[in-house]
Image 1: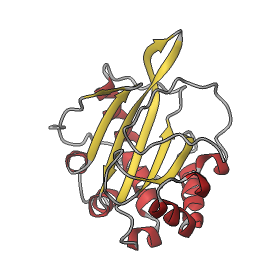
Image 2: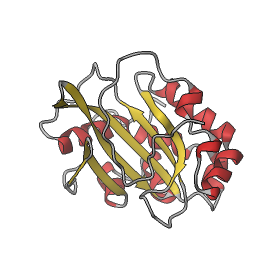
Image 3: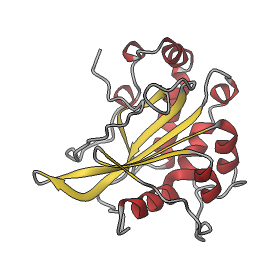
Image 4: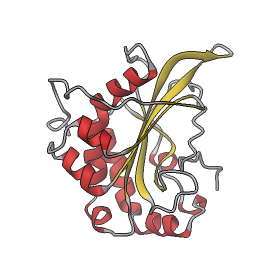
Length: 216
């Protein structure tokens, strides 16, 4: 048993950048069943172990430049202490060699979700048995990247957290909802290290260009 990195989610994301290396292996990317605290989430992890492994492989195929947070594939509640059903959650780390160009954490969050939001939500919602299970409340996507701020000369991660219901996820994945509509219906949080920041309501239309549908 290892001490898991908790996503469920008072989200104390105080992550400093780790040394670059190979993509995290599947047994480190998926939260072990024995490390779950909540019985209902543990039961889902046992039932859908193959789906979690398939999600890992599909993300690697779809976006090989991404890495996985330790225990980043798991069934988690959207917020700590929440009574909501566990959500199938994916936590990925953007390539530190491809820095986001936005001038603020919120701008960088928009850039990150524009690049990877639809792709990753498609992978989450493609788990047919999970989608059909009424005990799964929806999906969570956490995108983390290297921010400009440093602590003791080490860069701090910024993170964008999105939890959504199955219907909203499916509509967004299929291209039937815009990014603005998708985020408006989701539980959205933005972090600079441990500090939670406000995230503005998007009022502009989705930008032109690839939307992630063809790539995965």
